[in-house]
Image (cartoon, rainbow, N blue to C red; front, side, top):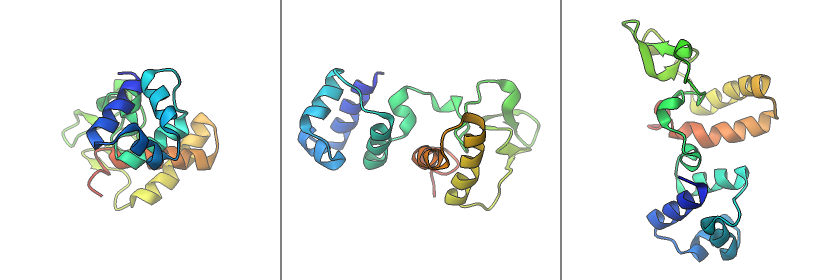
Length: 151
């Protein structure tokens, strides 16, 4: 599904008009219309704002299946070699090897905010960018993942 369709779908699910959505996002109604018509696309920061404002997972805007990402840290886990393990040694379907081993989380008794800070340092060292950008991205994505959803 394209971003334009996701924006229209989210707006409809929330029961908002384009004008109401625009007010919540501090943009014009015309901007919402252009996004929904596919004339333009919102930037990544605006997509993050839409996700947070309307309580939808960020990956929904990019058509990324949840099973493709670690449900703790958000890292892609398409390669079977980086899947974590269950207590019986089977590969975990939901978690990477850095977050989950032998049926348990490697970072136990950690709050989401602390996890975001620690994980952001790894993102910066691997992918570049600034620490603040990594924190912003993770704070938008992680609360919707299986491990953190209940918090």
